[in-house]
Length: 289
Image (cartoon, rainbow, N blue to C red; front, top):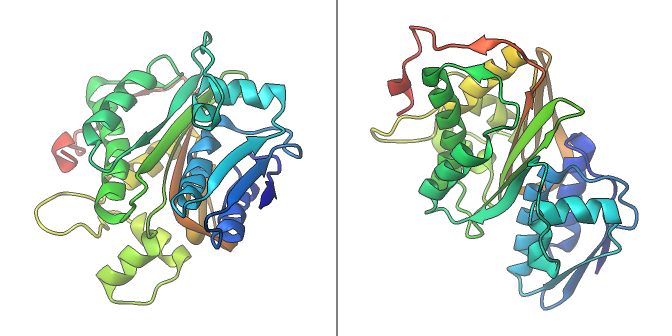
C-alpha cells in the first residue's frame, strides 16, 4: 500500500491526515506500507510523534514500513530529531539545538521521560518561571505521561518529540500513544456511553480523573490549560474521533472524520512571552506530587 502524505502542520488537518493513514492501513497484514512524501511540502517536526504511533501500529501487524520521496529540507529536520533513524536514515547533529528529539518509550519508562523533559526543555524559550512554578509545570507534563501509562492500554509504548521554532516564536511538545483513547476510559469510569468529544471535555474539567485509589490526578491538563491561557499558547488533544484545541481563550471541539488510534496531546508554548510566572499560595506542589 502507498499512502501519499500531504503537508503536515500541528493543525486539525494534520491530525486528520494521521487518523486517515491509520484508517486506510488498519487492515494491512504481512504487507508493506510505503509512505510517500512527494506531496508533502512541509512537516512540523513535532508531528513525528503521532505519525510514529500510527506506523508502530501498522508494523505491529507484521508489515514492513518504507519512507520514500522525502524532500531534502524535510529529511534534514527529521534526521536531526532522529525520527528517520528507524527507517534507514542516519542521524544529523542538531547544531542549533532546536529539536526535542524523537523517542519511543515503554510504559515503564517514567524515569526516562522525566529526565527527557528536564534536559530537553532547557534553552528552548520556556518563559521565566519561579522554581516552584517550574516544578509544577514539568510535573503537569509528567502527569500526562502517567495518564498514558495508567490508562492507554498501549502495547506500543509512548511516542514523544518536539520542536522549537525561533522565527515563529513557538515551542511544540507532542506526546502520542497507540492505546484505547480517552473515550474508553471515561465510559468505563462514568458507566455512560460518552463520545470522544465528550470524553475530552470531561477530562479537562478541574479535578476530573479516572484514577482510583490514593494516587492523585486530574491536575496536569487543567494546570497546563491555565498556563496556556496566560501564555497565549495552544493546547491540542486528539483522541479517537475527538479533536480539541484551546487557543486565545477560545475552544474548538468537534468530531473528526477518521478514527485516530489512541491519544495525542500537543502543547504549544508562546516563546515571545516575557512574563515571569510564580507559584500562587493557593497552588501547592503537593496537589500533584
